[in-house]
Image 1 (cartoon, one colour):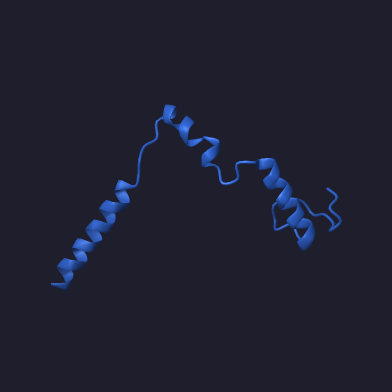
Image 2 (spheres, one colour):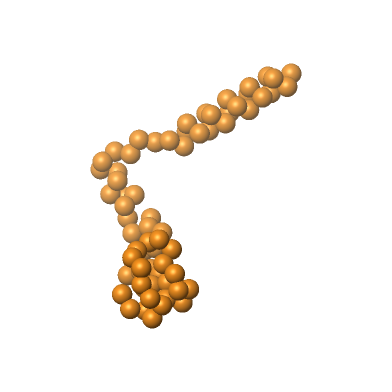
Length: 73
C-alpha cells in the first residue's frame, strides 16, 4: 500500500514540475523583458547602492576589481 501511495505522489510531483515548464516564443519575450519584471528596475540606483555597500564594508565581494575603502574607483 505504501508503495502505491509513493508512486502516486511521485507521479503528481513530476506532472506538477512539467506543467511549470513552457516554451517562450520570440515575440513573447518582449513582455518578459519588461522593466516591471526586473529585480532592480532602476539599475543606476542599484549600482550606486552596491557601491556604497562596498565602501562601507571595505570589500568588493568578487564582483569587480580591487580598490580601497575611500569610495574611489
